[in-house]
Length: 180
Image (tube, rainbow, N blue to C red; front, side, top):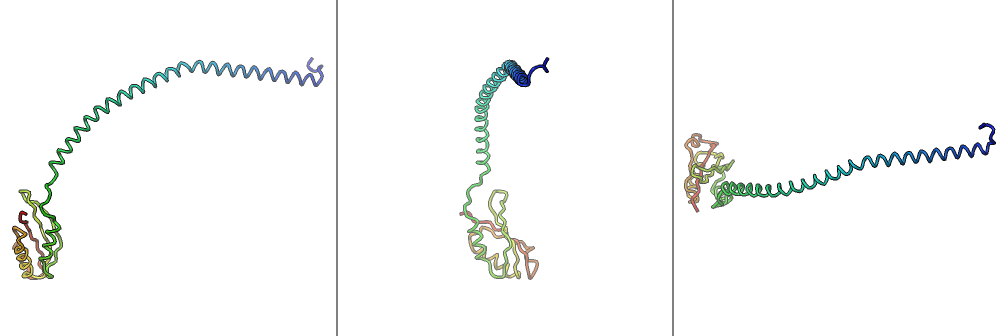
């Protein structure tokens, strides 16, 4: 029977068939999307509610941690201040630069100073340990005497072991400063 129709009507029937098929497919797709959206609404509302509850709990926790953290931080800062006050050394009575300048001015050309070391004795007083090399024993003794003559140092110790050699004498002097 289909073959009995003329070509123009066949084309019209095919066009109408395709249009109806497209409309049915669109209606089915719309119905499927509508059903899917309706099925997703409960989980969306549940997720939104859980998110609101989580945000509220986070704010409460943040406020409580901030309050506790501030108190703990204050306590830590007080402890740190106390430790720093205990460890902070007293201001030096003299600058080390002044002491070193006086020692360098007191040395002669036959003395080579190689190092300065600041040490503290058992009572917390500052001592300067001076190491170097002297060309001969006499120049080392003269250097130690010139340091004693400065009246800047309370005590100048020259170990006897430093006087054992005649030439190229390696020495170590310990100087205790006068109280200013």
